[in-house]
Length: 153
Length: 134
Image 1 (cartoon, each protein chain N blue to C red):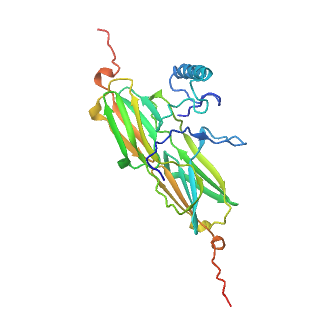
Image 2 (cartoon, helix red, strand yellow):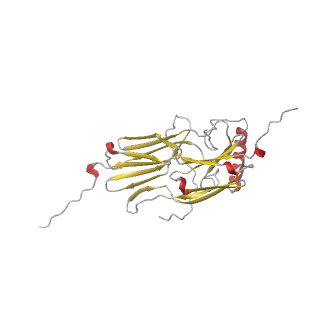
Image 3 (tube, chains in turn green, orange):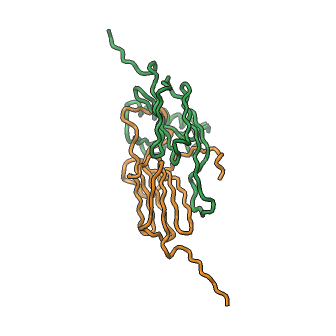
């Protein structure tokens, strides 16, 4: 999905009818935060904690995704404690010291991020995968948290 | 290098170009390290979500262009709960100041990182010239 944010061009795809409205609410929040000075103009949407996370849900699962280029699965520690998902680890960029750097933008260091999931989950069935530098954590919702269809008897 | 420091989250930089792209979607600038040794130039670019097959490297008139396409990874049934980063392709251009031996360029993609080895052409490799005395 391609999402465009405020100050750029309009959204290019719509998934559910409420998304438009939700995005408007988000942008209004952002705008009021900007005006009151509680948010930084440069990166208005992010929590500022590495790694940035996109969280989605379908009826059965939550999906937490983060971009972690150059990180091996052994350098990652993923834990779930109740509704809290913790992603921590370290990014090492090994470099010979005696080379001449022309440009240096990639950074190494430790990170730890906790996000609170919106509903109850089943911690025993969490699956995580790391492909092409992209972490995908699939967190099944607890039975009690899944939407139920109620039939009229 | 101090590896104990905390990593800071950075918002992806959208490509700023005088000409707009006609393709759909956003295009980002990958964070890149470039370093030089006596024989080659190494370019390392972070392109998370890009498969090896979707990387394109082009060198024309000393302009090196790297592009990486990202296939959307979300399924249609998923609804957003929290959106902190956006998904798009990567594109970046560099002007090479050194002549490169084009036939020997090697590219390798690992864990969403592109490693590009650009060997200098023979004439660009520094030659040590001995000065004889006497």
